[in-house]
Amino acid sequence: MRFLVRVILIAGLAYLVSRYLPWWGTAIVGFAVGFLMSQGKKKRLFSRKPKPSFSFIAGFLAVALLWGLMAWWMDTQNGSQLSLSISELLSLQSPPPPSASLQILWITSLI
Image 1 (cartoon, rainbow, N blue to C red):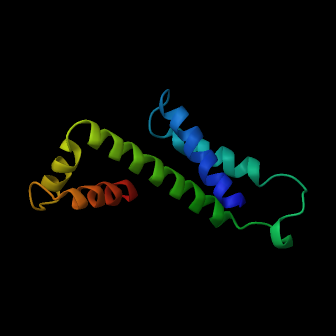
Image 2: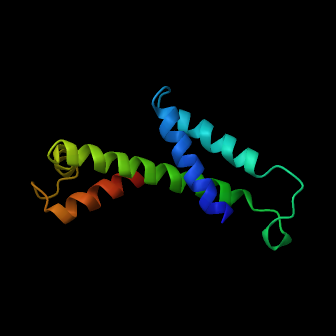
Image 3: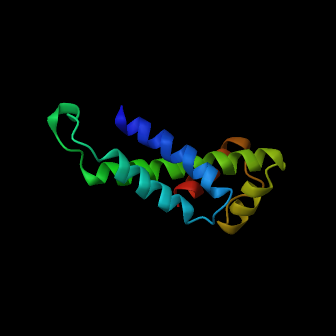
């Protein structure tokens, strides 16, 4: 549950910060949320301290989902120009079918 809260919180705050700061503002948000949510003396789930890798994975997943959704939104608004450009860069078939367009955007959001 805390993991899901971290992912949603990082994605939401990163979206807000990306309006005012460059791309590296998302790293500041991920660090701040990971740091603040690991503080405190409350009893943890299963009585163990969460591993630092969970904070990294939550930040990575949140930013990948955020950038993937933003790329998908921009791609649908401009007639798939973004996915066409990416398919040309990756030497894929031009124009890609609609299902491949979404796959291309998700793969590039993970990169």
